[in-house]
Image (cartoon, rainbow over all chains, first blue to last red; front, side, top):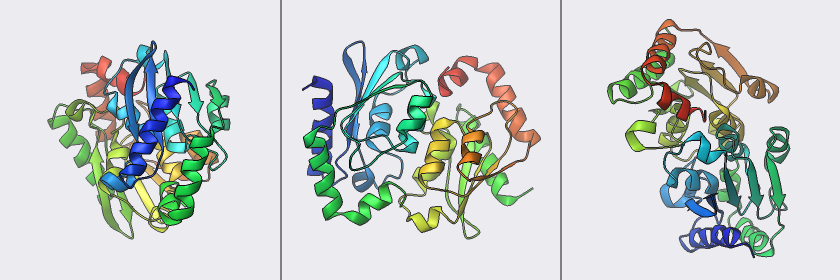
Length: 145
Length: 145
């Protein structure tokens, strides 16, 4: 598997080990990971630190040139908030682990000219299926339901 | 002036006093502020803590029922990221200090059924005009330009 999706999955697994929502993400610029993170709803009682938001935050401040030449990898289809962050910074390409357990704002991303690749990765799907089955209330909270 | 927009302006002014981007926000549920904050780009080197995101984060975890019965006040028109967060949590009403210095994702919010009120408040406009004139590079970074 692509090393960057592998890194995103490792983030998701770390989140799971911490008792959190198992979604991970990495931001890649010029072939290097410049930010990585995972959902922090449980760990930090955070309403905004989804996987992608954590990766962006951990990348610290970057110039527009960096974002516009980066790829963001995420284990799950990006929700409206994370898709909004991707649109704000005009990250041109998103690699998505799966969109079977949750379909985010992919249509909006595409209509904004952002390139999407969906892998339907089995490990990403299993992580979410297991978590949602065991923790439906936390999952609903995470997606505003 | 509405006490909640006044609180958002106080947040913006606190951000300015800290050397930061002067944008503030409050989240109001059942007539009470449950989260308030201001942009933290300079203060925390944050790429994601815009005013609205700070208010949401400082409100901690809330149920869907709370968000769907809340109003968010922000001194400036919400960017794509903050608009995405508002859409994720289905906050039904946004009161905006001004949209003259920056027009965010208002069309998308409206098309999502979210009610907007734009005040064109003079203090909000002045705060942004002065900051952008003095710090164009920080401002451009904040909006991904």
